[in-house]
Length: 123
Image (cartoon, rainbow, N blue to C red; front, side, top):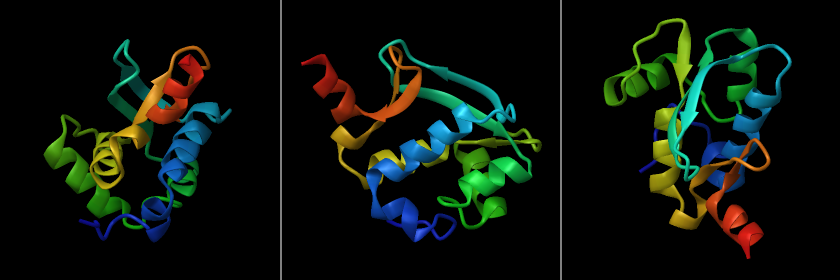
């Protein structure tokens, strides 16, 4: 099922979300409000400050921020009005794409990656 608050670009390529999340992490503008991943690399939570720069980066994936934030806050433990929680983005991504395309945290390289890429690096 496609959500109207996400862009077609989100659904086009599984790697697109990874690229956007990494751009948020790498930004010199201190956009990350909070994040934590399980030691296995699985996504626990990731939130960025709700500001113009964060929205600019996320606009490749999110078309309606108000609806997205409402959905995220209703479905995940996030109710900060000054932050954009990204758990919904990861969850929708996992449900839409295959398990090998799951967004994971790569502890060795301090970045997000798809599960298949991390597992290939381990071989």
